[in-house]
Image (tube, rainbow, N blue to C red; front, side):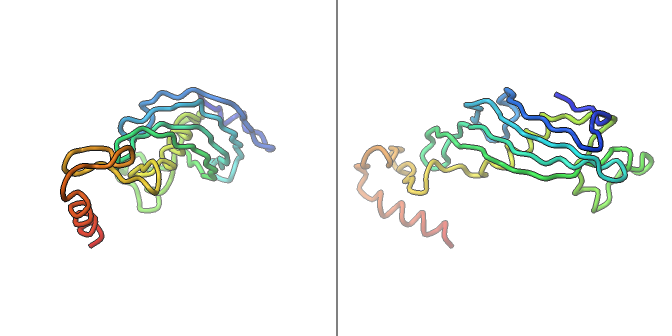
Length: 170
């Protein structure tokens, strides 16, 4: 889904819609969309070909907890405000980007890919180490039982787990 920058008038352009995105857009392993992606985006022209993109993204993503390995739903509700720069500001003869240019988000030609913006914003909102809840106990390091669902019968599970946790805190 593309926006033609020539359609962005002096009052801007606003799009309010739903879209189905493929699961491979998600960077987190074993994740998938469990709901459509709702977006409300406004585009406005800035100076020197720059385009301001403000909006909201809402969806739900199924993730795997890094502690207990169970699936859980993570609600995405993100607001963003970004500036897109035209690709032609980059010197074609220079193969490296300046430090400032590394911070830029670019568009090429006269089209802006809305899917790329949505993909980026959704992935920003997904935690690096997703956990189903703050109280998740994880799995027993000895027998592999999910400690959220049943008690472990291993002799030293509590001590082993606390030793393991102590090492992580250091």
